[in-house]
Image (cartoon, rainbow, N blue to C red; front, side, top):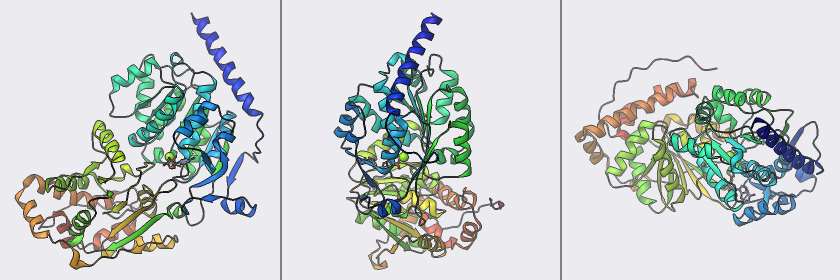
Length: 517
Ligand code: ADP
Ligand code: MG
């Protein structure tokens, strides 16, 4: 029995090596193991880079059909409307096909998902990977929503190629997941905690034939505190596999993770131009509005009423605010969906899909929805609460106007003492114009609002919690800075509580935290 097992593993290894060798014949020049994609240089060479709607989402001049992929893959891509590769895809795919480890940094929206799904699919097809071989590809992502998003793309592609795929995420049905894993899935997408759980506890979850490991949004995985889980996972998984690491940003920590997980990797960097990620957002119209705290909710209410046929995402800094405002808005007859970190998984998944598929509607969310998630055709991204750094702002507004042919608008709502963020955004050469609006057009519901809150203890409790957590989000956020703390001290709290429908400023005991380095 053991011998039989061994020989089938060896046979498979031979098959894998043969596939790699065939691809190695392809001629690709790799200088010092690094490939830089520099738009300016490409242009100097007379290389035409087609920009779609001015977005940095630019296509390379290679079609997928010219990339020596299997016919099955090319056809599956075509059926999904993917014909021409993006720059990142054009650079990553041929090297990945050679079986090399890759560390790729490229900004959000550059097409990284297909850059790893396509080579993954190629391995499965070319090695004729079977269900009883266990799992062939593992993709690790930081959030459940991102896992589902990748799953939705992978499922469609793999279905046409008769390959199976599955997703395991914290909060999902563990037993059902285990059953599926034991049966075997060709391609598996997972969040780190749950993957580690199954690796340790699900007997019969077979990984010994693993061909490829992808770590997507590595920066967010580390930011979410999954470093230990990731290290343990790397220890458990077999060593003779190909590993690819993707990240929107590069940092010392990411480099260290690379050293730990990658073997003689090729570095592929899509140069982020000096102005940061802003060119990613050129088909996004960005606006801001400075408004007194007492008018904030009135404004939101008016905005929602005036935009009832639109698809809108509204960002808050804390789960409590999402809870309060979604309860409140639904209570007064405005249907809204909400996603925040404290929701049960099953709800998050349903809500994510519902909003994804709807043509109009409102989603209230915290930064859980911020990284890597892609909602098509969102008309408006509203920052109801100030993002606590320029990066957070960019990630939030990056949820729309992604991919070719998309358009979107964003609105940053600021209190009069929060304008330094605006300055910092403008310093990065990002154009944000003032939102045109006059106070006379506000629908004044303030009195009714306060009456509703004061006469409904459940709502009032939620309002107080929401207010407190708004203040806490400033004080204790990861981006906690002196500026943010000074801001919160300067906020006109008497006015601000009105946007929570409160009449009295709730007492909050604040601990002062040292500045984070
Ligand atoms: P990233 O992971 O780099 O942030 P994604 O892989 O999520 O970017 O891609 C961003 C958007 O671009 C998605 O809507 C995706 O469907 C679209 N897209 C990616 N590659 C292509 C392509 N080759 N042709 C057309 N659209 C693409
Ligand atoms: Mg991505």
